Length: 116
Image 1 (spheres, rainbow, N blue to C red):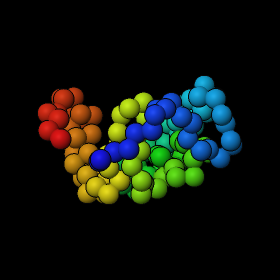
Image 2 (image 1 turned 90 degrees about the vertical axis):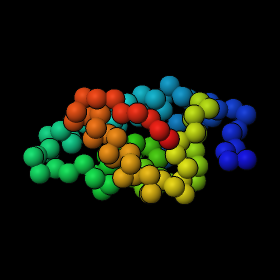
Image 3 (image 1 turned 60 degrees about the horizontal axis):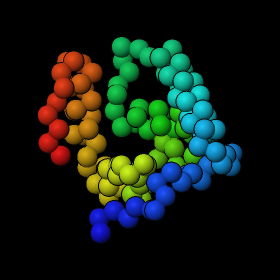
Image 4 (image 1 turned 180 degrees about the vertical axis):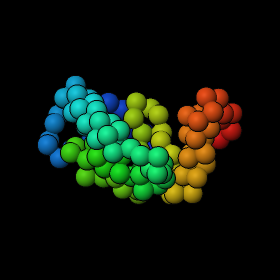
């Protein structure tokens, strides 16, 4: 089997503060992403490059207070609500393609064909 889905797709990820309720985690994630957005927007310059390092920085800033894996490449496959994220073993190789698609979407305002 390519992915092993647990019976309960609503399970709570282990987190640093030990939150148990999905609502608490959602609020904490929202607050983290909001703080990261403010911080990163204030430090944005024309020389800022949206590359792997910057993406990992976003991921470290946003949910880093919740998850020890934030800002790091995954080494396990994960899913949420039945949706399987990119396979960990291919993620580093997929990054250039994902980056190109993000660029196409955000810089040309066109929707790319999703051929994956």
